[in-house]
Length: 368
Image (tube, rainbow, N blue to C red; front, side):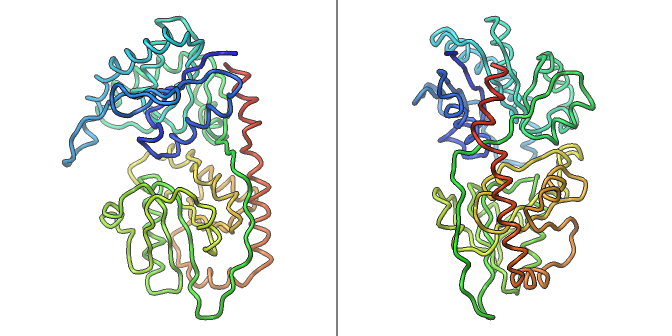
């Protein structure tokens, strides 16, 4: 039995991002080991083997992204807590999760100091998605993290991308889910019934453009969108997401019942934004896994040259649109094609089996 420390900026309950849920579930996947977690939260708090440290810089004005280099000064603070946990819990190895270089780099430095194993786990590209003056410290951090002989990545898309650029061994540790597949009755409707879509997850630069396009197109139609997200309604209003056809539900804890109330799941990615081309090409949205088990057909908006599009097309597990073309009339027709909808749901649930905890456990046991 090993003593493992997971280092992740995103950590429940203080952040409710996809990375936070995946980090917490690592403890379940590795239940035969002692697993501890350090993440973002109030200083000097801990709960259920989770430890928290505050690395935020309070500033809500314009140009917030330019403060990114200042957070690098917080590496020492995070490392200090990691050092304490290593000594108190006799840690054997550290899994450092990116998308946050502060926590990941602190984990790397602590592992070197204590001569224990460090395993990077990338949910996104790093250096390829950094711009301007931020590139200078990013290159140094990247060079250190990539000293690791074996690196975990979250999708085959990211694995293939990295293997073309770097000589490390990259192993795919897919998203994993402990939830059961869901099955729902077909909703009864008439010609005047609304067509309800359900979206769950974060709306940021990875999918803002595609989500906004969907919302603009459904105005004045019978299509309604219900959104469950930790993003505030005010922010979604500012970003052009909320209109008369969009219903904001806030953060819904139990999603199973909501799925049954809707006709379709909405999955959005791209089309453009402030991320790099490499990031849009390789992202595999975590919410995809949740949608695959939902028991409802998925409608996906994703650019042609992306791993997500390739993944869905290969498995025929969703209706996919790869351009910003009108789609409302097509959705009306799709709703009446029961055979296609059933095939999408069946293929999605078969695909969901790829993300079993047992598969994740085999990968983790091979590297820790």
